[in-house]
Length: 241
Image 1 (cartoon, rainbow, N blue to C red):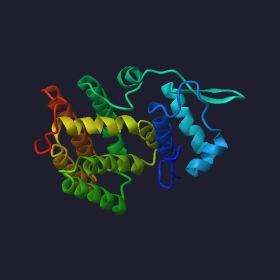
Image 2 (tube, helix red, strand yellow):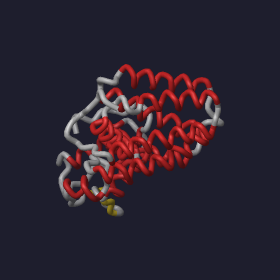
Image 3 (cartoon, rainbow, N blue to C red):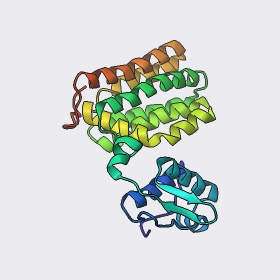
């Protein structure tokens, strides 16, 4: 537990959840072990009980822990391979058809997200999107930086909608979205998405809802088609589109 540090940034629950899950997956906490009590976890992370409870609920959804009333929360028996391949694809999405499933979800939800966002976007939002776009261009040869910028771009669009359900669902499946983004970049490289983000920002500036929705849909559809044409996980073709 010595590697746990207090959390001071946004998405507290997601970060606490990630750290707790890491302890279970690495075997720091083994099957049958009891997690520290809530007040102890609060002290460790420097967060509230609400945040701790939310993180533990996510672990319960994954089947990694179970809470026994009056006794505490305990690590359940689970197979790491099964967790990765079939239980929940939060750790790593390896198969193309699973990746396409995530992209199909994104195509539907993100078309709707940008349709809502276009009428609510402000100058500060445009500035943020421009910054993430610049980061994507700058980090085209740096995989981690590129992915973080791409995810930030789409996360900001969800936040602009002001719809609490969209924002919470997006946060809840952030692990899936991040893993899928990593695999898209690994399969197709980084340059494929840059032109689409430029077009999307320009359309947002014009306030054209139909154009924004069409661009977002085509952006993700092109990614799906590229994977179907023969994407594989053999290497990172970062210089290709």
